[in-house]
Image (cartoon, rainbow, N blue to C red; front, side):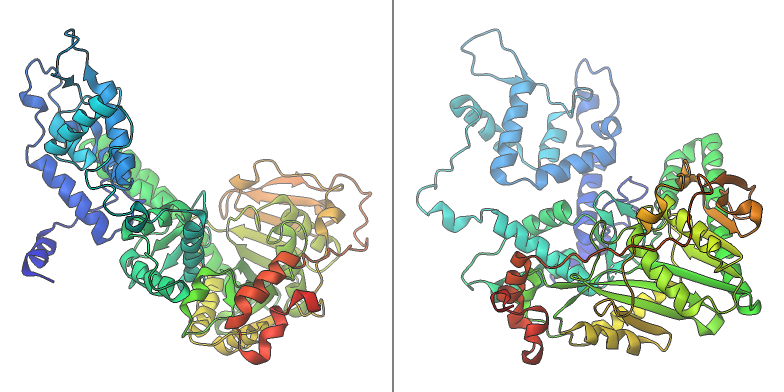
Length: 592
C-alpha cells in the first residue's frame, strides 16, 4: 500500500452509518470511502445555490435533499453500466432544458433538479452523476446530434466489442447466485428472525471476510470451473448482483445490534437530539422496548432454572438451523461452488437442565421432506412430537416451551391446536409457550448449531451418516436423529386432524405467552397475554365436543427427487463425491 493511500485511510474520520440513515449498508471501506467523499464535497462549499441570483431558498443542496437520499441516488447511478448511466443523464437533460425562444439558437440552458421538488446547482448534479463538466458538455452535444441513441465512442470498430465487455446473460447471474448460496451454506450463520427483510432471514458471514475477499475467491473458483481465458465479471458487477440476488447475505460486524427495532430507535435518537421533548419521548420508548426484551429474556432464564430445581417441570426450545450440503470438503474443488449440491436440513429440539442440556438434531435429506409446506408448521410439530415421546414425558406434569416468533413455523394457529390436543391426550397437566421478542431471540439452540457448524467446516462429508457423526462429535449434548426411511419418525398430518374442529385465534402475533391447562373447564381453551406476568385473557379454540382426540393420524408422503434433479446430481455432483459413496445420492437415474 502506498504512503498516500495509507494517509488517506488514516485521515478518514469515523462515520456512524446509523446516524446518517444508512443502517442497511455494509460498514466497509467501499461504503465509507463514498460517505467520506460526499461529506467532503458538501463541507467544501461546492454547492453554488446560495450565491445564485434570485435564489429564494437559502438552503444548500445537501440541506434540501438530505444525506441518505443523495447517497442512495449516487450509489444507484454508480452501479449502472456506462451506456445506462449516459442514457439516464441524457433523458434528464431533456426534462431539465429551459426552452429557448430562438429556434436556431445553439445555446442550451438547463434547470438541474434532484426530483420535482428539489432544484439543485450544476456542481451538485455533476457530483451525483459522478461526471465532470467536460463530460456533461459531451453528452449535451451528443444529445442534440443523435438524440437518445447509445453514444458511440470514436474507437468503436477497431476492437471487437465482444472481446471488451462481458454480457450478463442468465448463466453468469446464475453462477454468481449459486456461488453465494454455497458460500453462505459453508461459512454463514443464520440470524433466526432477529433481523430479516423481504428476501428472508439474514445470514451473517464472519467478520474477517468482506465483499472484496469473496470476489477474489469467486474469480479463483470461476477460472477453475470455466476456461482460463474466459473473462470474469468486474468487482462492481459482482457487488451489484450480490445486492440484487442475495440481499439477506450480510457481514456480522463486532458488537452490532441484531434487533431492527433497537437500530431504528438509535437512529431516531441521533436525529432528534436538537428537540429535547421528542428526544426524551423516544428515549422512554426505547427504554420500554429494552425492558420488555430483558423481561422476556429473564422469563426464559427462569424457566431453565425451574426445570433444574423442580422435577415436575420440563423446559424445551426448538428451531431450524441453516441447511448444510454434501458433498463437502475443507479442500473444496472450486467448481462445486457454482452447483446445486444435495441439501440437508437440520432441526433442533433442546431440553434444558443446567449443565445437562441435551439437543436432538433431526437430519433430513432434501428427498425426505413431506409434501406441502416442507418446512412449515406441520413439519416442525412432527419433530417436536417425536421429541416429546423420546425425552420429555417421563412423569413430568408441566411443560414449558420457548421458541422464536417465526409465524410460518412456530407462532401460528396449528401450533396452538397441537398443544391443546397434547393436553387432551393427557401427556401434561400444564403447558406454557412463550415467544421471545423479535430481534432478541438468541437462545440455547443457536449455541448447539454453532458447535455443529464448526466441526462441519473441518470434515469431509459424502453422506448423511457423515453429518450424523459430525453432530454427535460436536458436543456430548448434541445427538443426531436420522429419518432413515421412516424408521425413526413419520410425517403425520396434524392439520387435517385439527382444522375442522378448532378455531383460529385473531391477531395471534400480538401475543407472546400462551398457557394450556387440563382442568375440565380449560380443555380446548388457551390463555393468552402480551407480556410475561401480564393480564391473561382466554380464548376457546375447540369448536365443539365432537372432536375425537384419539382419531388415527394420517401420514404424508415424501417429496421425492424429480427425474430432472436426479439427472443433475448424476451429471454435475457425482464427480465431487468420493468413490465408495457415488451411488448413494448421485446414482444414474436411467439404471434405477
